[in-house]
Length: 165
View 1 (cartoon, rainbow, N blue to C red):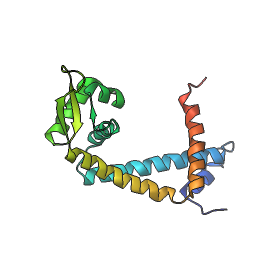
View 2 (view 1 turned 180 degrees about the horizontal axis):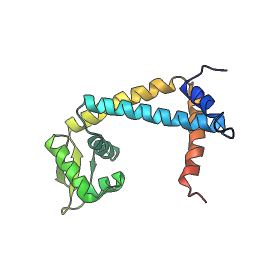
View 3 (view 1 turned 135 degrees about the vertical axis):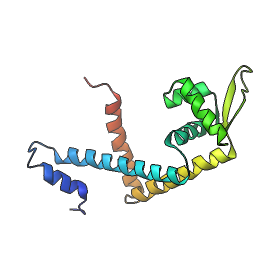
View 4 (view 1 turned 45 degrees about the horizontal axis):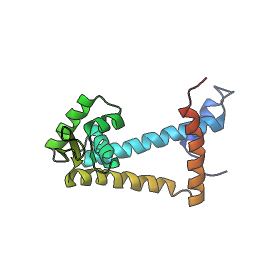
């Protein structure tokens, strides 16, 4: 058996209380929850270091994912937010020098939002630290195991994406 972690102790604690508990399911779900919390904590720590709020990072991330330039309506859709809420975020990010409003290249009536060099650097700084932690964690697996893990998790996500009967 491989090294034991805190989840093994958690499962052992609950098996006598819930004899029908499937230790593999409980172990997998509890480990996924732990890793999600861990990565969220790393993200919060790096954002605090960079003096970025979570919603600011999320907006910069959505903008970077669109090549650094997007219509506010596209950002609202990407962030699943009301357009007015995105406007408030863009206002804050513009005051900080992370984004600027520019005329749209496709519609003269529209204004797009564009990352500035400072905005790209802030986003990239957070991404680099988060990515380093993700690589550190998954370095416990060889490339074939990482691919297998990704494939297995995809199968679970596909079930989660379907409505439950």
